[in-house]
Length: 419
Image 1 (cartoon, rainbow, N blue to C red):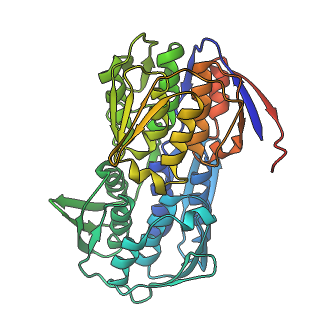
Image 2: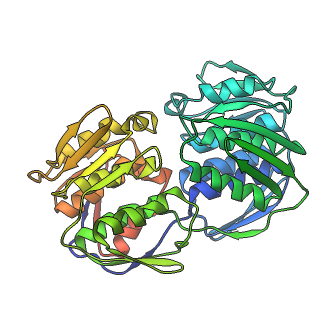
Image 3: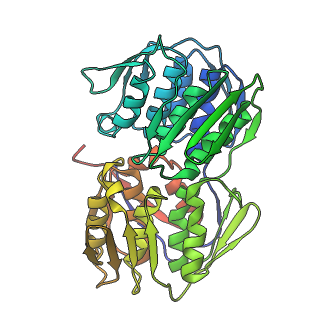
């Protein structure tokens, strides 16, 4: 599906969608740990739906009440699991399946099979878990003889490797493992918070994690809003007009809450309150440096900001972007150049700054974050751009276009002739 989006002066407020980083972890761990949980204010993006389907595969009963979901588990090892395009469910799922000593066939979208997991498989193999690559380029897993031995994981590729091991060791009364080259530590904090709510104590000292489990059950939890999703509206508002975003926890564990500091250091445009923020339109913005080793999901939208900044945006450690849902490094360069930005690339960083703004006729990406970033760039530049593959946004933010409408956007849809 294609769409054109028009917006002159945004105004009003929106509710931030649920944080899928939290939601996926709670749903998956409930199903595998046999501990009931109710989660309130779920957005039901594609990644969250994948985790719900995995719970059902594990024999859980899933009950819905408007935007609330209850997982009532009765665990049975699944024979097969479909992970869709969800890297979080895939990597965490490997730890959950292995910790429950299951024999299972895994598969998913072909793009997910290209996401790196070799370091994680290497660690699990040393824990007596066997992996056999199947014809779908995913793995059949035999964890029937999994053991509680000490392992050291190389975490330089993804924090999800560490989170997967945390889930694995949680199924033993106690456990310990080591980490080297750890990145994106705040995502691990989210996993530790989730485990704590299910009665698993996690102790971190230097490069080691130790766990102790109890019989404590989880509870009724209100899902906080997702900072990576609202980042698009923050960038839109600082160039186009005031917006209020509700359902945001002020002191969130989410790494992408760092966007508040990024923007306020550059232009002091955001007022923060206990459960919402207000973004003000600004005239000038200082230069920004973003380290994507810390917050990779913010890279597309912060790069988009660079299109309109005379002082520019510098993205460092950009090599991490090449193995996301798409090669975001190349797609970011493609997007900003389409809108006329000047770019400089070296071995360490990308510099993006304002050039002569262009009006691209058509933009299309398969990556949800690139599609949303392109739309925001078009709204700021007031271009007459047609956006293709608009349904890709359902992976993380199915209400994105509806939320744009709530602040005054006009959207027209046309069918895609190429699909």
